[in-house]
Image 1 (spheres, helix red, strand yellow):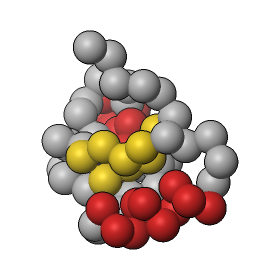
Image 2 (tube, protein in one colour):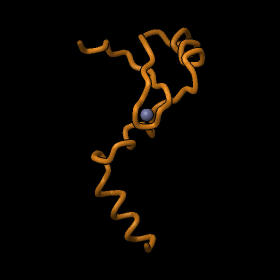
Image 3 (cartoon, protein in one colour):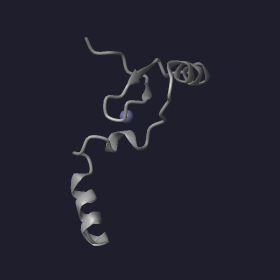
Length: 65
Ligand SMILES: [Zn+2]
């Protein structure tokens, strides 16, 4: 695949492909690391396991039930 084609493909998939929403987020390897970050940043309520990248992300949103 040429570099140009790869670029177009990436652009097309932006916002659709699973994984792209992870790229700008902090990721944590463990609950302990995530909890330590949460403690430092008021507003972030919890960590959740991302099923896309399998790391933990932080969110201030409540779990929807
Ligand atoms: Zn993720």
